Image (cartoon, rainbow, N blue to C red; front, side):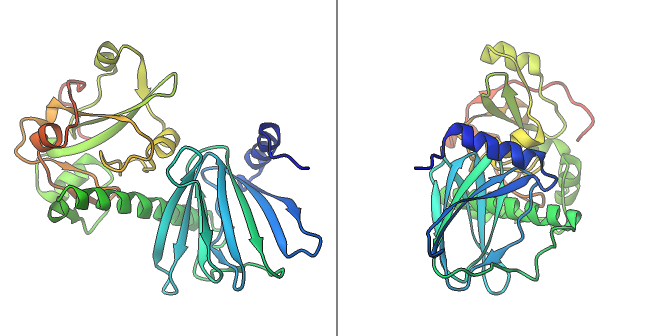
Length: 308
């Protein structure tokens, strides 16, 4: 008997974290005739696995800890599906059919996937159109594309369910800041409803949606919620929400979190939250988010500051 216990997983995680590639692949066990093979993948955010396919072998992936995106691609090199796997998420694992090009992207530190497949031994076929491992800049861009594809798909699903799809829009250029988004739309920067993730010392996350020309007043947050919060790091934002900083939306959050709509948005006839990417959003109102969709109101913003 060979156990997959906490100590064993911790060792794999340490090996991944000490590697320059931020990943470690362990051959867990194989059958004597090598037709059944099992692996453990320890992955850190920032690691890169070039998309691969197995031409004659189906593969099963199970997430033992952490959170990992698994993306599959069409023959035209387009995203087919992007699924978030996690021990505490709705999807814990999946099966990938033979011949399907796919890749894995870690959302959370210390993530571990279990892989099993049956069939004759064959080498994975790497996707020639994907960045090489050595091309760090292109690999980072590719990882971000996978993450943004997942977050955008989640928001679009929520917009559709709420009957808001006709309010969705995309910019022709990236809008990483509230000011850039306001200039692209031709509106006041305060109308850009930016979503800021806060994290407490005990790991509780809350999201504050406020006017684009305001900052979160952490003192107000502490007084209202009874504990100290700080601005989440980009790594914490990704692990908690599934979003990259600058693309966070009040919809389709990866983990259940309290979401507050700040009264700094109340004075505008229309406001524009992000929709899971750095070049999109949707049109809504303060009343629609609070009175109709049910997000609680808050007063967590400081006075007007230079737009971010």
